[in-house]
Length: 101
Image 1 (cartoon, rainbow, N blue to C red):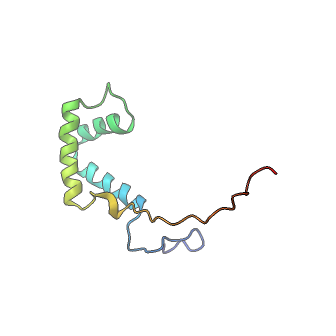
Image 2: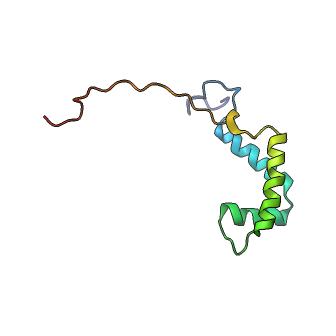
């Protein structure tokens, strides 16, 4: 977070990618892999959900397979690198807490 002193706190480990990094990486692959017309129709189908101007089921399958292969080649899939959850035990609550007396 160089240059943003006092504007927020950085994540615990700056070497780990964040969810924002994930979206940037996906966007970079999608924009580089698809031609302009495919990208426009991809956006209509997946982002704006405009089926009339979007891709057919066959085109969707072909693009999904192509992008999926690229995601795996670039290490974006599986997404565990970006999205990890650590389970913590919840503190025990007092049984009488929040009950009317």
